[in-house]
Length: 119
Image (cartoon, rainbow, N blue to C red; front, side):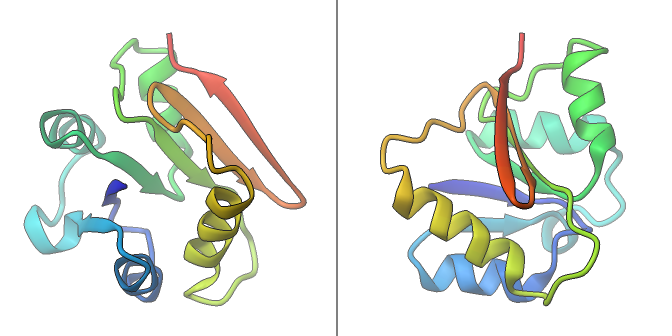
């Protein structure tokens, strides 16, 4: 899968996802300081799913109708190791091989994972 990690997404998790074979760009490496609208635009142009800890990206996509075509994966974690988000995502994808992240906001809010279509 192709992902765009927001600046708040930990680099150790980016590395874990890359080692698992995923194509992951980190916004801090390609456009540091980008505002949320630009992150969404960049993800849409490159066909990537956004990885973030920023709930404002979901608000932007839903309330302001700026769709993130590849989807948004939002991690609602309060205490975690830097590689935890990647491991959670990899476990989820392994347990749900038909999972579709496109056009959806997927919320990791342990112990559950929720999805909502971005319309």
